[in-house]
Image 1 (spheres, rainbow over the protein chains, first blue to last red):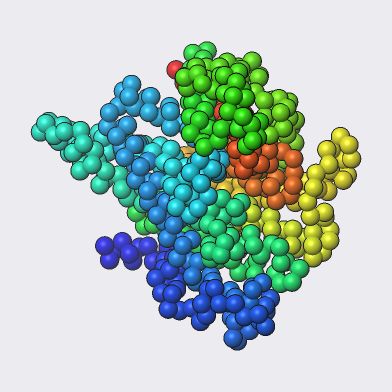
Image 2: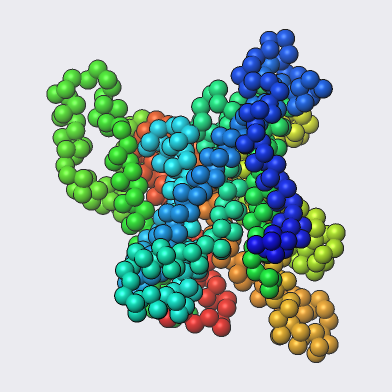
Length: 274
Length: 315
């Protein structure tokens, strides 16, 4: 484990990724205590302020402290993205691993259907699901999870196919174990490493997809501190201050870059050959 | 490439469209919207509503409604928009033309920039140029389209005033004005693909340049440029075809966002307003058209790949 961590931190991607994602998690976990102001505190006399010693990142159209809002929004934005990715990955992994285990006609049928669902762009699929369930954060989470399932099923299937040929799986079949036991206890644990890499990179997609849904008015609703929503609201006040637009945009980009770097670093650390 | 491979691939494309149609019909069926109420208004009498439901077949079992709808789609009849009362097909296909202009220009811009960027990064591996391309591609894949679009409008349209901030003019009507309005949306849509594809070209080319046949070509004393272009690139660019085709999914998603921000009357914008108004026939037709575009592009890419790479024998 320490050996693995050492390898992860030695690559520039892994180091930077750990640093950025670490900082983001500090904001997520401690955001509530770190905020200098309340995220909803309005100061009528301090609207559209540029960054200063008092308001590090400036204030928005209602005089709310942008740094406080960003820190507060980190929780909803990042936690939701991670949760959506985990649910989507789990669903996809079970489907893909199960399909690889069944093999033959059933595998062919499941994978062709998964391919077919992938013909609908994930943003569009998420839009449809949200419009079906109603616009709020919880439904956006579910929509993104569903939109991720087909591609995760594909990836886990190709990994599982390699695992399927291993001897310990044949041994379990020879022992007469049930299908559920073999898929969940023998195959899934060995499929996890490559899936974790893919999942980490996916979190950055989820952050972006989440922000996009909120931006289009189909995710979090005002006065939530969701970063995509902050960008969307800031567009109306651009002529007064562009800081209200720049900071949430930067936060989204930094989070996405962080998870991308971490994913690439993990991949390199898990495959010492490349 | 055998005839049976093509046939199998055609069957697969049709199966994809079938699954998408069932999915889309299913989702729109569950949507809480009563078509009859939407068309006649909240104040319509129960008798009038019932009569319209009867006429539109809304009282039929779901599978019969599906067959009715799918039968129409096959004959290019996508039904009547609940909001406008006009046939869905013609309006959506003219919107599709607008979106395709945007998408094709974005693809072209992506190829022109991403392939050379990937080549330079691979050739100058570990040097400043490689790091610069790597950095740009990390930033590129990490910026959602709505952020790039908003920043581009802020800087280039509002601050410098170089280009109009939004709007669309058909190229056939006013070429210069049309292009002026397309520059920002096309660039925004292509950013993410440029970032992704340049990285793929780089890693493919780095792999290919380490193969035995490239080493053999070098040892034969061929000019390095000839080795790079004739031996390296030819093989490195093949997988790029598949990657670009798969990226068309992102492209279509990006088109939805960009059309919304730049007020371009394309299929993405029609879909967004249909989703907001719960205009079921337009949602169904829009998703079908998008999925069909994606499947056809990937079908073409697979055929092209099989045709270009003679080593691969599909059966």
